[in-house]
Structure formats: structure tokens, C-alpha cells
Image (tube, rainbow, N blue to C red; front, side, top):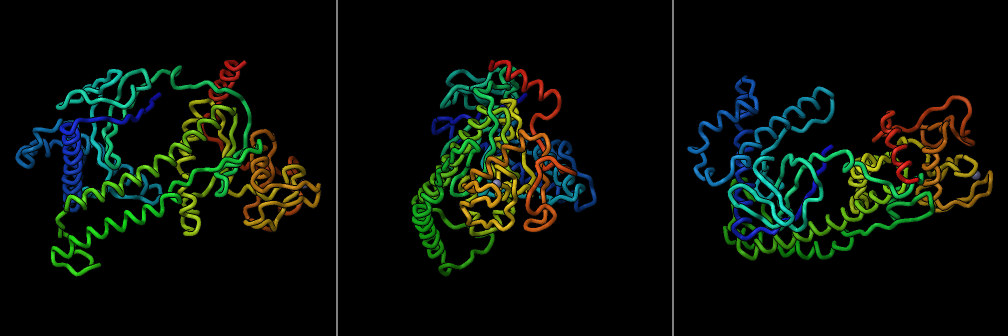
Length: 438
Ligand SMILES: [Zn+2]
């Protein structure tokens, strides 16, 4: 089992300077390789990552004399990455999925990072020893014990991080749950998560809170860009020709950095919330049921997009999937068409005409007064406990499933698929966890 720990670094100015140069090297080499790949492909050849690397190694010191100062891992890895990117592209094309061809990296527009192979670095409690620059102090000790696999140094705004990949034992990978509940989770905008226990959890909305500051800082930056344009003799607000580089003043640089720091802070607040929520859900439950939200489709709705991405549903989904594996929690994902909001969680009557802004409703059949989100969470929870599942109606309102939806009658369409541990070995893991708890 592999785990990755990302640790903040405190490099000296010289070390930070080396990091920046190594990132630049990785980017330059990637661009060289991609350009060469495209050229060979256009000429009817069959380029490969290995052949390109060989070709590069023969000429690299003539091409980029400064390469001698940078450790070779930083300029060897881009070839492997490029090879992988192309295989992914061709696999996607073959599978009829939307495929993305690798693109050229542009300074300041792409994430800065470079790679270090496992035999080239070592860690102590406080430092990581890297080739060419020696010990760099870390903000915390490496959390995992095991064989070091690789490391990637990267930059976010003005901070440097190292992500260390470790091969850990099963004992370290699997974590003990604190409780073995079953919880349905209804995701929403007012409350990020409503649990079937009745608890409603509000998310911090860092983007909403920072919008004003973002606007102010964005404006300050654009004033500097406009000033540089005017100094270079371009008309205000005009689009620059492609190969023109404006001179960058110190204040421009500072302004860019401040804006980047603000964006990084927003991302951190968001990630902190989803991490804590997903860990808690997996730690306290043997089964968690969530909806299969169509996040991409919802982001297409401009009015929802900002609020949605501010809560970080995409992140929530990825995090809960890998954490469910670690805690041996069964993750049940309800079909997109499962009418979790429209079913009465008490008598299973289906309210066909429920609208998006009906926050509360009363069931005409059993008279129960429902809070929309809590009721949905209860219905989701049922998917993990009921042996037979209600029929899903893909047609939305109306259709065959109108009115009373039997819990177990007639033909039953399963409306879930599971991810994480669903085979027998997973169930054994579940049992092992339960034993550990009792
Ligand atoms: Zn009812």
C-alpha cells in the first residue's frame, strides 16, 4: 500500500533558488520533449519516451549548458511523464472518452515541480537531504514508516512542499474506526452536509469571504500590468501580441505574489474542511451513503458553480473514496436518479412535485413533517441497510414509480454501486474492524 505525505519546507534563499531552477529545468525539458515528439509524429515516425530521452542525453549539455548544476532526476523524469500522458491520451481516444493531449508548459501558468528518485534523498525527523543542496528543513516529520518510493518538490504561491511517497505496511495503511454507525449524507449548498443523524454541517465559504479582497488585489495587479503596457508603448486594455514580454517591476512581482497567496489560502481553508469531514465520516461509520453528484454538470450552471466549488464537492468525493479504503468503511454511492429528496423516509410515499426551493414538506400519506435535507439523508442511509432497494425512476417527475414506492415488492432495481471494498476480502476487513472495536 502506498501513501503520500506532503510536507512544507523551509528552504534557505539559496535552496529556494535551486528549487526554482530545477522546476524551470523540468518545464524546459518537458517542452523540448513534447516539441520533438510532435515533430517526429508529424514526420510519420513513432516517438517513444525512452528514445527521446536517449536523444536528449546525447545533446543536452550543448543545448542547455546550465543543466550541469541541476540534479539529473529533475530533467530525466519529464520523459516518463510525457510517455504516460500520451498513453493516457491514446487510451482515452480508444475508449471514446474526452482525451487531452499533453500541452506545453508556460512559466507562471503551470504548477512548478520536479522529481527526486528514491535513492537520491533521505529523511530525518527535521530535515530532508536532497541532491546538490543538502539538508532542507521540514515543517513536520514524515508521518509514515516504510520504504521511500519517490519525492516531488513543488511550489504553491510562495511556499515550497515536498510530497514523499512511502510503501507502508497493511497495519499502517488500515486505520481503526472509532464507531460503527451507518450514515446517509445529503450534500447541499446551505449546509454542506446533512447527516441522517440530523446533524447539519455548514462549510466555511472561503471564496465568498475573500471575493472583495480578491477583487481589490486583482485590480492592483492589473494596474501594474497596464502601466507596463503603457511603458512599452501599447494602447491601454489592448491584447498583447503573443511573443511580447513586458518588463516586470518589483511592485508587479509583489502584487502577483500577494494575489497567489490569497488564492492558496482559499484552497487551504477549503481542503481543511473536506479533510476533517471525510475523515470523521469514515472514522465513525461502517457504512457511509452519499449521492453520485454530477459535479461537472452542476458546475455548468453559472449560478451554482461558485457556491459549489467553494464547498469543494469534487474534493469531498476523492477524499472519501480513499479514506473509506483506509478505514474499511463501506462507501455506498446512490445512483444519480435515486429520488432521495422526494421519498418520504417514514412511509416511502413519493412526492413527485417537490421543487428545489421546498425546504420543508409534510407527507400526505403518513403526515410526517420533513426537513428536506434530513429526509434525503435518511433515505440515503436506508440504501446501506435495506436488503431490497426502492425502484429508481430515471424519468424524474411522473413515470411508473409515481406515488407509493414499495421498499420490497415486485421487480427491484438496485440503485447503487459500491466502491472501495466490496469483495469478500473487504467484508473480512470490515469484520476485523468490528472485532477490533469490541
Ligand atoms: Zn410518509
